[in-house]
Image (cartoon, rainbow, N blue to C red; front, side, top):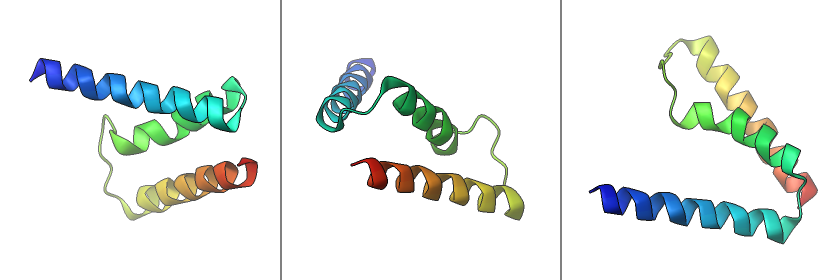
Length: 71
């Protein structure tokens, strides 16, 4: 199980590096998007309040807009 998890983590890292190279985004932008999106995928504390879900949706939309605009 640990081996599979390590392989998956390596594959994700490779995909991220390939995207950075392909689109030639500045590193600060990738870090900003990572910080914005990552907590939404695996939040430490899950908040099921309506306002927090709306806020999360807006952050994801903003990140997708930035990616589309720069690609």
